[in-house]
Image 1 (cartoon, rainbow, N blue to C red):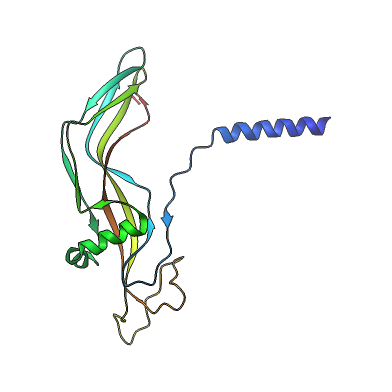
Image 2 (tube, rainbow, N blue to C red):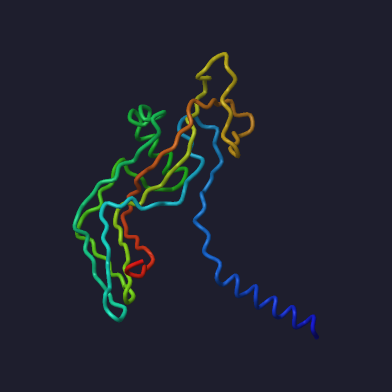
Length: 199
């Protein structure tokens, strides 16, 4: 009987602990490198909001209240890439854009404008404040620029990044590695957790 009771108490304690485990952060999304020359993006990081407007909403009253906020400023967010491939992207924006769209299914833009006039309704608890942001959703990518010819003849080919492997019998060479922060065609709001005024 004591053993059964111990198991019940342990199970209840575990259930209680799990109920308070914070949600894990969004994970990166990886894809296999293909044996195709050009831009090969192998990692997509979780999306992030690049804000073009922000405000604080404060509730000094004694009860929760709803506030309708309107964006009062426009702003433009531009895609940015590593200096190693900036010239290649400038000369061939189309292939770079198509590469990301076909490899990860994300609609991206060279630049995206978040316009004023959008509204958002937020409920703020009593004696709390909420930080509200509006802007363009962005994504960060890591990738390789591959070629059929060795960019450094006479030297061993560049090694692939850890955990990234070329397809079997693929004779392509790494010309450059890069990172890119790209603007998607999505705008949106993001609010912080309510914080006690005065903290």
